[in-house]
Image (cartoon, helix red, strand yellow):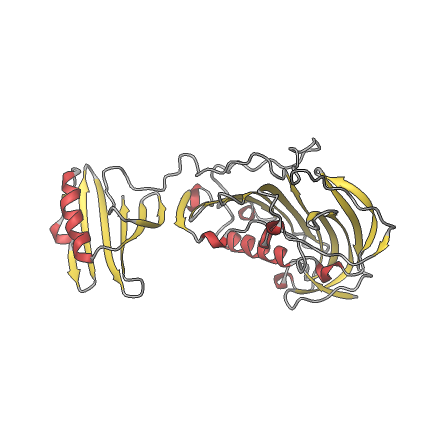
Length: 371
């Protein structure tokens, strides 16, 4: 019996899925599902564009074992956009029967930096079924885990965290069990418009443990298609049976896992925009400081930072809120060193402000809640 580990990418996906399910399902089992990106449907995908003057051509060779080298999508200057799809299905092979699935559809733009993915899951329990959507454009991100989880939430993001061509969405060296040493080349095919070398592998190949998520495989086989010219993974499939396939929680139960990953629509016209109609800001009658940097915003709440002092922020809202029709409640106000609180009412609504100074960032943080 061989011992291998799940791909790093798969482990990260499972962690996301587990986190979401622990919150009561990706959407809490309700709410409108975000629209998914378009996956391949048998029709020819959008034209894949190679560098000017160059056509990616397969390099013929005799089938058999050979060393496989990888290139990450992010390293290829000629790729600026692409879509990806990961589909996983799993089930226990004993009773009581448990099963589930997870599909992640992604869109990526290198320049200007933007990404969007939709993750949908199903499971034996109703709360395991739902959808999560994530959008990042530059240093701003939005996430929607369903109306029951509060709908869209806006946060600040680090542009360096962009995952174009890496992490969850690029099965490059180290993300395939054992690096596919010993995989057998069986021919050349064009997949999603990309000429590829086609390999197959099974449990007889030498599989290296990568030090995390070890499992015992009784059966394993799969295929991988790698760009003949550039060496990035275009498609990957895995079918496996064993114990611990879906992690430690299932213990020694025999399980079956199938997975498929592919890249398509390379250099298609992909436009990623902020979510339409997302209630992520403050009402128009609640102003922000001119230099406000929004850290998090969702319906009914916003947090931002400013270079102004606590005293200047207090003075700003005591002046501007009445100018916008709000009435201050002096009994609810408080002030101490480095901290202050204000409360205003207007036509049955209440706006509460907590203003604090952060010694580490030398910024003043403002949290506004409305109800």
